[in-house]
Length: 477
Image 1: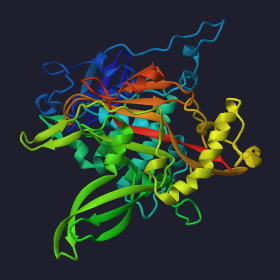
Image 2: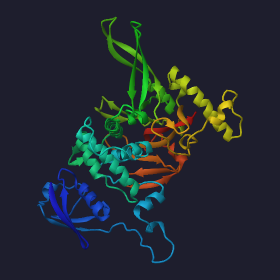
Image 3: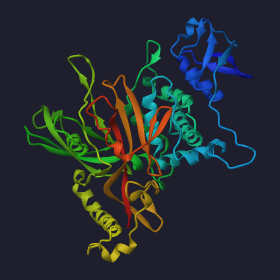
C-alpha cells in the first residue's frame, strides 16, 4: 500500500491509500467518490505523463507521501435561484434519488460488470434489503468474519445506491468480495479477469443465507431460503436393474437446458428436471446409469432460472456459448413442474386467483369459491405484472396468510453479450416498484419498454438472457 495526496483545483485530498495490486482504475474510483470527477474525465499527472487505467504501478516510482495533481470537471447539480420554483436538481441528492423512481448505477472497476449486474438484480428484492437492514452489525458467532464483512458491505452498498443519483463506485464491496472469494481477484496481464455472473450470484446467496439465519428457532430460520430456495423431489431409476430410489434436495435456482428442441423457457425447465447420472448399483455391484426425474416440492418467493448457455468445448479446450434463441414470458406458470402433493396445495389458491382476476373483468366467481370470495384478497405484488408492492418474507400478513399459486411475474433479467463466458459484457434489466423497467449498464441507467424486455432471448450477438428472476403471485385466504 502507498499513501499519497492529490491536489484538485483548490482542494487537497490527504492520505489516500493506493492498493498497487489493483489497476489504477480503482484509484480513480476512489477519487471519483471524493471529487465527483468521473474516471474518464480524470487527468492525473505522474512520471512519464498521464496515469492510464491499465498502467503498471511498479514502473511509476511513486513514493509514500507524494503529492499528485489531478485535472477534470465534476458532475455538478444546478443551483436553484434565490426565489422561484424548486427544481428536482435543487433538492438534496437523497430526495432526487427518491423522485427519480430508481436507484443509481455502479461504476465498472475493471471487468466488474458481472458483479454490478448481479448486485442490481439482488437489490431489486425489497424483502432481502429489509433483512439486511435488520442485520446486526455485531457478528454472529456462527458466521465467519469475511461472510459477516460481505453481508455488511452488501447492506452499505444497497443503502448508498438508494441515496445517490450519480453512479456509485463499489470499491469497498468489491474488496471484501475478493477477500471472501479469491477467484474474483484473478488477474491476466495485470488486469482483473471477467468472471461468471452466475457464480457471483450463487456465492452471494450462499453467504447471505449463512449470515441472515435467525438466531432464534421461533423466527424464520433461513430468510434467504424462504425468499429464493426451492425443494426438488427426485426419482432415480436404473434401467439395467430396475432399482428405484428417491431423494430430496434444496436449490436456489432452476436450470433451463438448451438444445435444438428447446425454443421456450418452459421446455428448457422440463429438460433441466430430467437427466442421467452414474452411480453404484447395489444390485449390479458396479457403476450404472440412472435416470433422474425431478419435480418441485416447495416454491420460493422469488424464482431464479439460469439459462445454461456455456459449456466446455473439448476439441478447442475452451468455453463456448450457445447463442440459440430461447423465449421467456413476462408471466410464468410452473404448476405442471410441481409434485402431486404441491399441486393439491396450489389448486385452491389458483382458483381464488382466477376468481379475483375474473371479477376485475366483470365475470362471476366459480361456484366452488363464491361463498368465500369476500374473504379473499390479493396483495399489491400479487396482482398483475405491473404492480410491485411488498408482503412479508414469510407468507403471513394481517388478516390472513398468503398462499402460493405457482404463477410468477418477471422482475429482473441479467443478460450477457458476447460469444465467450470469459469475455463479453453483463447488464441488468430491473423492474421498479412503479412497474417501469430500467437498464443498468454499469454506471449508465436508462428506462426501457416492457415489450422490449422479452426480446433479450438470444439468437445473435445482442444481449441475451442468462439469469431471469420471477416474483410469486400470491393470494390471501
